[in-house]
Each structure stands twice: as structure tokens, then as C-alpha cells.
Image (cartoon, rainbow, N blue to C red; front, side, top):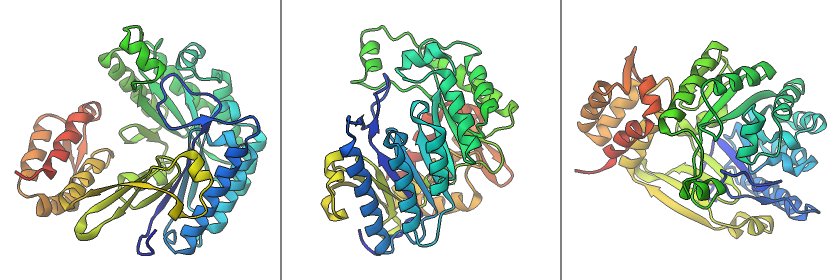
Length: 389
């Protein structure tokens, strides 16, 4: 890693789970009986963070996110990792989030993580309905999900929870019930994602056979709108296409992604982004296996896939990312885009406004409700600005 690189956010990938869900295509594997690989992996991550810190590339890092997989599958090793990372960052932490699944979230572990330096827990609830959870292949119950949220809040952690819309077995009213239950349990931040079905997963196989009994696209959109209304009623405002929070409870780490700030990701398939030359951008994805990462003594032992965005692509990406946020596109961003991408910017923004996907809010252009639901159209038109005619 070049000492010239400087990151503002750090992501650590824990590629272990107790079992794989029916919809999941993330890179993960089961924790072994003795957990040796998981322990070696966590130790290696800490070595790599230490190397990066010693080279000064983490001097501006203020947020850390430990995701998965299931970080809580590490047990007490997760608190050890959190404490080690905290101690390696030279200027302290503003936010450290870890993902947690209800079945591996104990009061003792939550307290240990809080004492080690964690400030935020992201609970993978997905639903508050036992029948839906069984269809998803989750190994926790609805009661366990709500108890995990309550326990995390009692441990002094800020709490986020995930929900999935469009699951087999969901119908009208179900997402509103989910929202009321998890917010009532103590979640001050909620992420709502539409179910994605991927080839090679159990859900992908069922869909290919015509046997996946899930809401269609319109039904899933109705569920997303239902969740949005229920969250607003509970006092959580949308600040990103899939994320809602009470005032002050937004994810600072994820905002770093959406605001285009440089971030470093460590672990199999973890992504990094840093500024390139001439206004371009570099993306790196770790191409090493879990075992290779666990055996790494330094960053030189890892392999990366590198994608380079030119100046036009980086600018179009900034527009796309801004359109994911409720605050939308600032006048300054639009003017910078015009300077880089040319007069087509004005025409594209006018088209998106006429289509009801963007609207003026003060001196900004923000997504409309229609824009949230038609994100593929909105983001696709903005990305197309990178093309040279």
C-alpha cells in the first residue's frame, strides 16, 4: 500500500457464518468446530491493520465497519479484534460498527464489544415473522431478533437493524408490523432492502424452476413503500435510498461511501476506493481466499483486482452516489459535473426532473418517491453521462 494513499474509513470483512441463508451469495464459510481458521484470520486482519497504520494510510480514518458474513460468529475474538483496531488508529474512533446475527449475540459479547470500543451494532433481523425467517433460511427466531436489538441497546450501543422486503410469505401489512416491532425493541436506524435472487443460491434454483413463491416486482415495491411510511410514522427519516434513522443516528461509515470519500477494505472480496491521478479513481477488490488472508504476514501477500475510473466516470459516479441520498445533488456538484461532463448534464437533469425522478429542494436536486423506486433508471441515466459522444 502506497504511503501516498490516505483513507477516511476502514472496512473489515469477516467471512464466517454458522450457516448460509437461502438468498445469500456473499463470500462466507462455516466456522469450524475448533475455530482455528477464524482465529488465525482475525489475527491476520489485525496484523494488516497494524501495517497500514504504521505506514500512515489510516491517519484520517474515523469510522470502522466490521461486516460479514457474521462477525459475531468469532465470539470473544470479535471484542479482541475491536480493541486491537481501536488501539492501532492514531487519532481514535468516531464510530465503530459491527454486524451481528441474533443467534450469536449474547449480552456478554455485546458488553465486551462495547467496552472494547464499539459504538454501534447492526443486527441482521430481516423479519419479525417466524414463518418468513424459516423460508429465508435464517437460524434465529423473531423473538431472538427482537431480544438482540434490546440487548444491544441495553449494552450502550447505538442499534441498527436490517429488514428484507419481497420475501416468500410476505404480504400487505407485514413490513409495517416488522417496522413497529424492531423500532419498539430499540432500533434507531433501519435498513430496508428488496430481496435479490442470485443464481447458484437455493432461491435462485427455486426461481429457475418457477417455484419461488415471492411477491412480484410491483408487490415488492408496495412493501418498500409500506415500510417507508411506517418508518416515517415511527420518527425515522429516510436519508439514503434504503436507510432510515432518527436524527443523529445515521451511519457515518456508510455516508463515507455515498459521499465518495476514500475507504480501505480488508478481507476476501472487500473493496477499497482511493483517488487516482487527474481526477480519476481507483477501486481495488481483494482477490485472495480466506485461507490466504489468514496466512498473510503483510499486505504484499494479498492479491487485488484493480479497476480504474477515468475523470468522467468518477464524476458520473459522484452524481449517482449523491442521487442515493435524500439531500441529493448540490449546486456545487452539478457545476463541477458540467465542467467535466459538458452540457449534456443539464439535459439529463431536466429529463430526470420531467420524468418525476428528481425535484428541486432549495438549491439542490433531490430524489422523489418515484425516483427512489425507479433507482435503476435514475442512476443509469447519470452513469451514461460518462460516455463520450
